[in-house]
Image 1 (cartoon, rainbow, N blue to C red):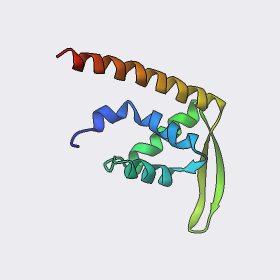
Image 2 (cartoon, helix red, strand yellow):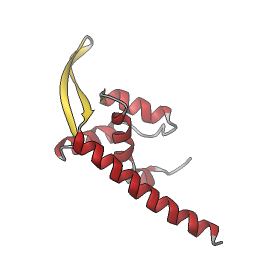
Image 3 (cartoon, one colour):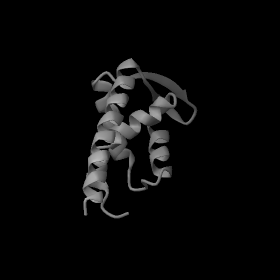
Length: 107
């Protein structure tokens, strides 16, 4: 689907939180997961700033893990505050989706 970038900006943080709800993960693998979900245009340049923002907000815990291919990599884990933020995201998502659905049905 063309030109999803603007629409996705508002939901990618929730998507990253949802991926981390499955278990600890690192940036490159998060990008791959988002791409495999059908959002091929989402790049590392989009996901890494989101991870930094989540870290600054205190929604994820970060650990460094040895990498056999280079420098240590950051592994992100969803913490309690992140779980609460994810629940709030889905609540807002349902609110918006419900109202958009109503608007569509009223045609």
